[in-house]
Length: 232
Image (cartoon, rainbow, N blue to C red; front, top):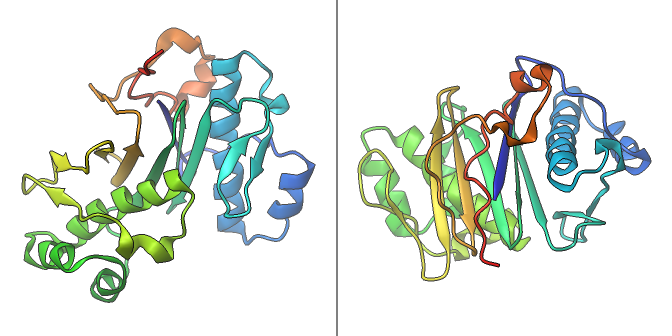
């Protein structure tokens, strides 16, 4: 799995939208449109380096349930998420999903938890020393799993319970056959990853193998982790 992160608050994404994407773009408000453009920018630039094709030749279509996919690289999956000007994209060989949430977004976490979480998760959030952070730690993993399966957020309460083995939300337990990972980035957001192929994250680090031009490194292809590790 490859992971790319982009912060819209610090730089503008390059417009790599095709005609169909431009038609969707014009109907969005400014904030949503910027996130959409940035998501396509990250996904297409990563794909360009992975598959050795021009970024503006990468086509991303959307399934009936809203899940993006590559039209020409059918052995690979792509997942894109955005929140509060933070955009994350994952590219992997097997089903996987990603989500991002700011730690301190103002939401009614009690009502949302009651609607979306299992009772054990609601209790875990309530008893946490930091209920807001606990809420988002649970949320990003559950939504990442939904994105990987192409399911609606309305089915979140049907997912298995998230169980953290430590107060700092490390060592998350997942069902057999599924791997979950929670990343806490220094720019104030959680990233949740869900995969059926296995995730092996050593550290967030620069990945020099793409030989990116210096200008590209202001955004988060700097944060490529984990490295591609899939069974042949």
